[in-house]
Every structure is written in C-alpha cells, then in structure tokens.
Image 1: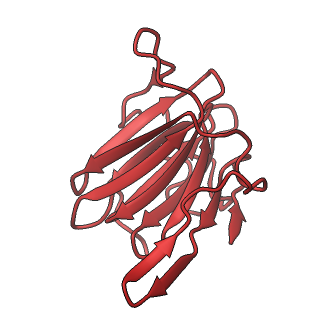
Image 2 (image 1 turned 45 degrees about the vertical axis):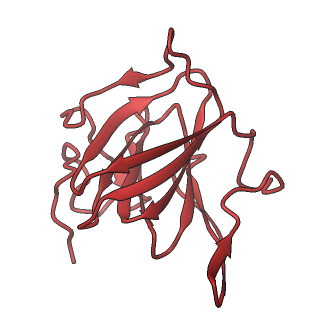
Length: 171
C-alpha cells in the first residue's frame, strides 16, 4: 500500500510479508515499483541505533533520495522543508515493515523510539563521496526547526514550536 505525505516526494510503501512455516519472505525494494522509486539505488547502508538515540539533522543538495526500512525495533523518521516549514513524521517498525522515501533536499533525521535498539537498512540514490560529502548538517536540537504543520495537521500541539525529539507522545 502506497501512502503520500503533504511534504512533496515523501511517501511510504508497506512491505508485503509472505509467511510460511519457516518464517516469512518479503520484497524490500523492486525496480518496477515505478509509483514509488524515481531513480535506482547506488548504495545500501545499515544503521544500528540504541534506544532514544537521535540522528539528525542533515540534507543532501545534489539530488540524493533516501529510502529507509526499519527491520528491528521502531524508529521515528522525520523530514522538514526549510522553505515551507512543512514537516513529515513517519514511524517505521519491525511490526509493520514500511519503506520510507525521503527526498534528500529536505532536512531529515531519525530517533529510535523502541525500548530495544533499532536496525535500519537505508538505500540511497548517490554514492557517498568521502572527499566531498553531500551533507549539510544542522544540530539535532536546532531551535530553527519549527513545523508549520505535521503530516498536514496544523492543529498538532507541536506545531509552531521548535522541534523536540523527546516530546512525550500525546493521546
């Protein structure tokens, strides 16, 4: 199932798990997913993060797109458009594997929200250049990240305030 977010280009695709008596099989990424993938993958990476760990903020200005797939634990994956202040927030989890597409021109970051470490595969459309990295960094706790809306919701209590990765979940 494909889901679009109000932040243009941010979208998710639920991964179809095919269970059998051995466990399950799932296709994580397919070249023929034309409604989801605009450009093919140049590099695959693996990230392991301890509970509560924030990895933010950065962006890529040379056209890179990132695709995140959380395979253990749970992670909050966020993207922020500096120009419009629109914000996308997606939860990736081993319980419901979902591929998350983030265009690299948005500031983006993650936080492990599970009580156990998260393990995330992420696929990128540009090779990492060790001599000239395509990364513009902003501190994880920057007071300049102030969402005007979150996933299209302007009434979210976190709107209009500096982004707080540790804001308690609201009910």
